[in-house]
Each structure stands twice: as structure tokens, then as C-alpha cells.
Image (tube, rainbow, N blue to C red; front, top):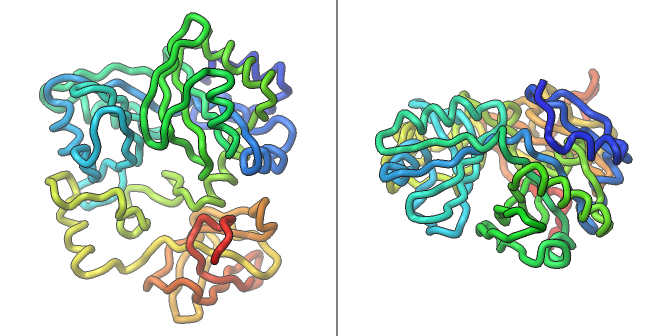
Length: 350
């Protein structure tokens, strides 16, 4: 099993570990609830070294990105980041990822950990592309929360803008940063060499930033309505079914485009839907759902929202149902009432 080079630092901080995709990673330190609330109210850091990442360069890099990915890299420019997906011929999501664009022919592609090798190989097969694995020789740290931008400034002396890249020198090392994350909060992600990463973690602890594990990362992403590959999206779901149409550009040719064109013209038969329960119970993956307007479906992700203190979830419902529609989720043999709501669930409406 792989271990992050930061493993001993986590041990010293009292982390509990879990096997996640072949990596032994911190699942929690104090408690998932405390870590979740720290990120929502102040700041927290996560070791996300298990995430995939590789450098893509060469004269064919832009063409490869446009051919393989459903978002169009031409929508942005060097110095920016883009959320996108790689699809199969039927429009199903092989993986979702972030692309960091450094200069005209140099990009970092960050797929999910389980799909690193497959996605990297697909790019390596494209003409004019050079691919270099970054995962096994770097560490990656996510610094998230409303106070995270201030921590970037106080500890590092620089901060990345939202969906922008930046670099900074730090105690003899170089930090490659992007204003991205998976919690619905401000902040960014930092990639660097292991020694520099250890020094940075120690500085964040001294600054009072809360160490957070994968448990809080999952409740934070769910509360924000962010999809998880393998749960909410996979090769049987299309971006339009998953509500990810903002990351699709039909103005360029890419693998899977024909299916998405058809769905955009005729509509989807099911759609990933946000659920907030009013009754007692937690919607779990695989639980049945029925809506008051006749729709049926299945929960793909669900948990207790630490901010709302009620169950929230994501579910595919067919036919698609409207916001505000009443729903019921079968929780351990009883039907629990709720409503269809648009995430992020924890944000005030008005």
C-alpha cells in the first residue's frame, strides 16, 4: 500500500488512517464534525497526495485536450484552471478532472486517483504529447476555508486566485498552486516536493490551521453538492444527466459529443438531484427514492449535513423532477420525507 511522504507528520498529529484507493491516508484527527466545521468557519488542511497528477506538454498538447475532453481548453488561457471530463463514445464519464494551464504547451492534468494510469495513457497515445508522472515524486496539500486566503498570505506570502495558477518559493522549495478545491470554500491546492511539504505542514499547524482527514473532505464536498467519481458519476452517466453541463462545450469535436448533442436536443431521461430530508434519517448510497410527481430513483451519495443537522444526498431520479418537489427516501424500511433542493445545501436561500 502506498503512503504519503507526509505520513509521519500525520501520525504525530494523532491521525487515524484508512485505505483509500491503495493509499493509507488520514481519515480523521479529532472528529469529522470538528474538522468539517473548522473548514466552514475558519481553515483546514488536507493531505491529498493520493490524487492523480501528471504533466502534459508538447506541440500536440492543446489538440489532445480538445479531442479527449468535453470542456474546451480554448475557453481559458495560460495561468488558469478548468474543470472538465474525459468521456467514452457513449458520453459516459471515464473521469472528471482539473487542468492547470502553465504556459502555451505545458499543462498539469489532475484525474482521480483510481484513474491516473488510464487517463495518463490516453494522453500519452495522442500525437505530439509528452506525459510525465508527478504523483509519486510530489506531495499535494489542500488549504481550504474562509480564512484560507489569509493563511496563504501569512504563511506563504502569496495566494492563487480562484481557478488561477501561481508559484512561490518557500524555504528553499517551490510551491505550485491553484485556486481550486473540493469543499465549496475558498482556498487552494499546493503541489511541492516532500521535504518542502513537511515544512509547510508544520507551519500550517503553528498557524492554527486544523488538520483534516478524508472523512471531513467527503461531508464537505457532499454538503456543497460536488460529485464523486465512482458514486455519483461513472461511465454509465453523462455530464448532462449529472448536472455538469457547465463543463461541456459542444462547439468543438470530442469523444462522446454525439450523445451529448442528442441529449441537449431531446432532454435527459434522468438527472442527478439534490435531496434534503425533513424527517429523521440519513440517505445512503443505494437507497430508493420516489418523488411526489411520479419519479423514481436511487441515492448515489448521502450523509448527515453537519451544518443543517439533517440528512442530505444526491440521487438520480427518472423522469427528472423540479426544485421544491416533495420526495421520500426509503431508510431501513421506512419512507422519510424530504424535498428536491439545489446544492450547495448549506448556503442560505433568499
